[in-house]
Length: 78
Image 1 (cartoon, rainbow, N blue to C red):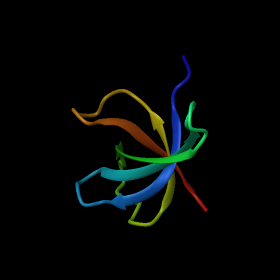
Image 2 (cartoon, rainbow, N blue to C red; image 1 turned 180 degrees about the vertical axis):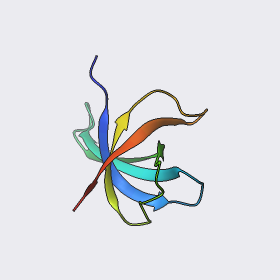
Image 3 (cartoon, rainbow, N blue to C red; image 1 turned 30 degrees about the horizontal axis):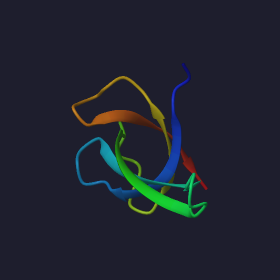
Image 4 (cartoon, one colour; image 1 turned 135 degrees about the horizontal axis):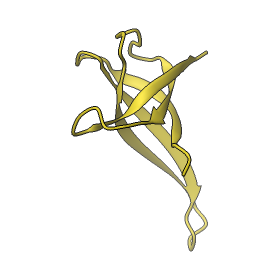
């Protein structure tokens, strides 16, 4: 099974080697046909502490680093 790749914006970089990424996705409701916007926060591993608030990043699913941290930062998106 392929690993999940998500794109979002860094909203917190306070913990050491960790960033919080806000990922937003849109989908159409099956019955109402209304477009719904859903936001979810993911904790991602950032080994060098190089990403700051407001950066647009791409994260990939990986082995668990801790209880809540199951993603790793792939790259910075310009």
